[in-house]
Amino acid sequence: MSVALDVFAQCVEAVQQGELIESVSSKDKEFHFQNWFQKRLEALGVFFDASGRNTYPDFRMVNSPDGFEVKGLAWPGRERDYDCNSQVPSGFHNGRKIFYVFGRYPANLSQYPAQAGGQRYYPVIDLVICHGDFLNADHDYIHKNKSVKGFGSYGDIMIRDRKMYVAPTPFALTKGTTGLMTLILPDNMEVDERFQQVGILLRVEASELVVGYTFDLRTNHLIAEKISNPTAGSTHQFKAYRLTSQTSRPVTMSTGLTREEDVLGDDE
Image 1 (tube, rainbow, N blue to C red):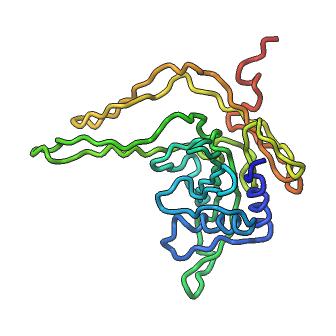
Image 2 (spheres, rainbow, N blue to C red; image 1 turned 90 degrees about the vertical axis):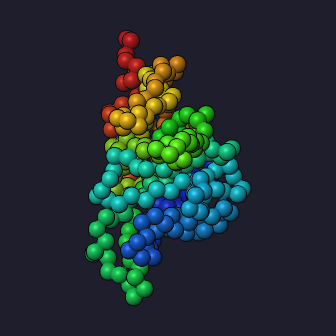
Image 3 (tube, helix red, strand yellow; image 1 turned 120 degrees about the vertical axis):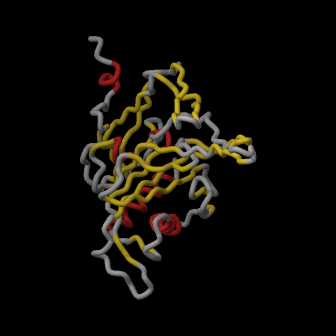
């Protein structure tokens, strides 16, 4: 079984026991939640390669083909989507299964007084660990930055095509995850007796795929090039879990689609 089960259980225990996020300074907008998650891995005693500013995923397990990408989100705040930067979310990368760890913390930290060294301590409000395929099931796309030369009146300016991606968060995709800790896995991944199933979630492939785009430097218009998706309408089924010690509050898709017949229609 995946180490993600133990990681999730460790995160639940830490939140329930009041293990707080520590921000090194008011300028720490990125690594405070990563540091909190790293402590959970250390508590488990698993071996991992530590995170770095330009590494993906943030944490790569040594003794299992798993990786964890960590996203801390202020709440209330931006909830609908998040910046993936230059890496499209996926459940598979370089031979590893990729899991995304979304943790939300208070946006207003004024109620948590700064310590002598400038640190603040505040709680994890809620957390979702989801398999990357829940965000995007495509494993074939490879991100590359390209450039063109010859721009400008003297023809010596280079334009760099540095693609940035924005994807929906599991909090926006689902109902029943706010204020709680939830694990979302493909339906073919096994869990053990520590877990209870609290939802069946379906994601449906789009009718069209974006395969390219053009940008007109004169008008600043960006136009997508699309083709028909040969697997349009295909469903990818996932299951939501919590520990048996947690609430059994159900988790559904925000669209209300939780069963295959809701998507495909009932022929009977």
